[in-house]
Amino acid sequence: MKLLEINNFTVWYESLFGDIRALDRCSLWIEQGNISCLLGINGAGKTTLFRAISGVISDFDGKITVGEILFNSKSLLKSKPYSIVSMGIGHAPQGRHIFYTLSVEDNLYLGAYPNRKEIDSKKKIEKEKDYVYDLFPVLKERCHQKAGTLSGGEQQMLSIGRALMSCPKLLLLDEPFLGLAPVIIEEILKSLKHLKEKGLTIFLAEQNAKAALSIADFGFVMDDGYIISQGDASQLSTSNVIQEIYFGENK
Ligand SMILES: Nc1ncnc2c1ncn2[C@@H]1O[C@H](COP(=O)(O)OP(=O)(O)OP(=O)(O)O)[C@@H](O)[C@H]1O
Ligand SMILES: [Mg+2]
Image (cartoon, rainbow, N blue to C red; front, top):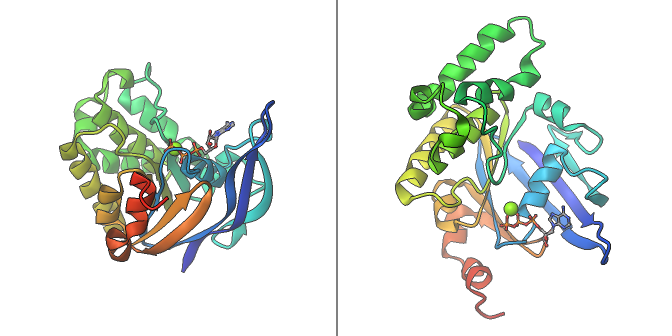
């Protein structure tokens, strides 16, 4: 079943020096229960697509001209970011965007904010927090530490953990491996595999194609805002399209 469907989606950013087309008739879909990845070099449009899914491209900086984004067959285009979270989309953004001066635990509680109105919310939030602590035990050890004092890897785990606190059906991860040591990447990959086994659908944007394809079921390759290739992860790993966009071969 298609959990997310993006059809012919185009985004223009308005600028004083002329509009910038960041996404160009982008079409893709995410199968429920899969890990899918979006690969592409700097400026390909990965973050723009993730921000559009989460509803955080405002009229101020972006102008969506054409296309549709459907989640569970429902359009997301007129929804506010907080209701998109409530519908079941969690987002760990590029650059992590955690709250540096707050503790690890308070960062996690903020991720649960959309669930606050549920009658059993307190219990549910504590349960979700324990789940995050089981997944990333280092966060439990550091629960009272200010988030800004965590290492890069720990901050990434916190960003993922915060996104999980809203109990998403779809988790968007924008460049989670950026700047991390291979051993930490391995640790995060293991956690993502575990989340998939528990039934979570994951959509991962990465420049680290090797790491992303090592856990993905399916992948899309984006260049200049356009999906230029797609296929099973095993197929993409051996395809020369990745070589071409990353190393500029045959261009
Ligand atoms: N707020 C904005 N205003 C104007 N242009 C923007 C804005 N955000 C992104 N862009 C432009 O849109 C294009 C796509 O950028 P985007 O950040 O989506 O790419 P990306 O694939 O995530 O790159 P990276 O791998 O470096 O994170 C780029 O040309 C970028 O300069
Ligand atoms: Mg990006």
